[in-house]
Length: 373
Image 1 (cartoon, helix red, strand yellow):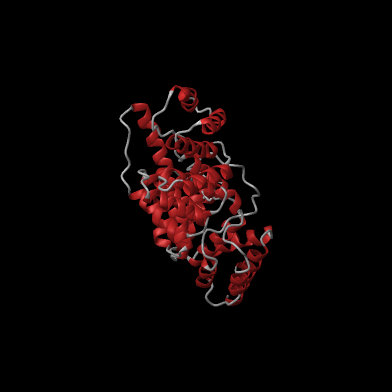
Image 2: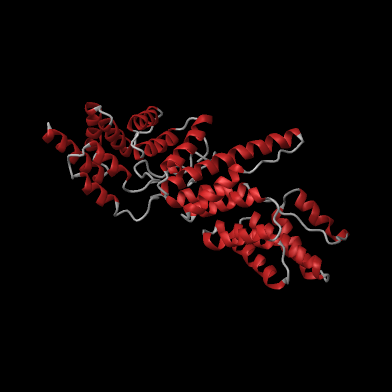
């Protein structure tokens, strides 16, 4: 699997099975996501049976959906996990540490963050040096974030920003990351951008986080911008062999995530050609039925019905059996001249009768074909 963005990515089987290796289980097989504009299938249907107006009813039914993402919450969880996996580890700025900080430094080295929080709070209470006190506050907000205590991380970061006359990037970065985890994407984006402006040197990391943040907030123009920036940026590889392999693996995972984000975002912006190119790149490294399905949607929107038939057929061959797949495959088969095969696919939709709007559209299309004959 490529890793499941909206999940996130749900990987369709929630949007992100394609972009991430660790995912919660799929919710219901019948609930599929919509990562393309609502009129795409209608356009294909109108081309396939240009002699009928019945498919307009399907377009109207689709417009009643409130969101393109039926299982959006699940995909958000997958993206947030990807965000956490790429975040920086807590570190203590050293303005002049004494022996009383040895225990804290040892706890940080062992990644015992829970005990580190307790120790850092005690040191803050007793520390008289202002600079060191603020350094400890910075560490504390990072520790809260790493422990999943996001609101405490945000509150501590806000305290630093309000108290320090010239705060560095750390509290802005941590607050932005915390807001992202809590689903407040607009404020998260603002803080992450400020972190970059105030000295955060890892621009790749910020671009990755902003791509995730913008995509989760359905700001597709921004998600395209930052995903493409991440993909275009040169990646530094460590000299140590073990660290090199670890970094290389992380880059591959992040690259796939950003390609997926870009592909789905372009789809939502109705730039199906750019979307298809990213799916081509993803499928060149690893086959996945959901990626074939999405590329089929792009090909259908671009009226390349024969290519769409190949993609939908491949998705079906690899185990995708959703009613929507049979509808899309049927439309594209009819559009490419394989009327009998397309009719059989639409009859499957009608026989299942588990998606009323697709059942109605399939019935109307087949009725129109019969009447024309």
